Image 1: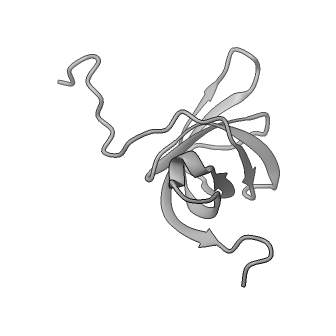
Image 2: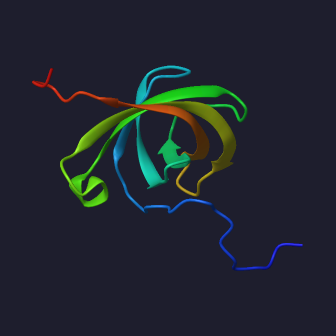
Length: 107
């Protein structure tokens, strides 16, 4: 039995509100609630189903990367969808694969 109040996540979670470009199931802009190396939680007003595949791109700020802002393209699976009090959906996704994307102007 799990102990209440004990963190079970294996990687550090950063409480960040960042824009995230969700490409699947249809392209739209959402905003993160938190981000870790293994997953993301974001708010959206678009319907998305638990168990479905998802692709998204976000830019990690310098305070996380400890260098410059880095754009990351991710693929994963939706693990949870909950209705928020403001009418939006809170979506938790597991990250299965990620790739750093060259910034505009870099080769």
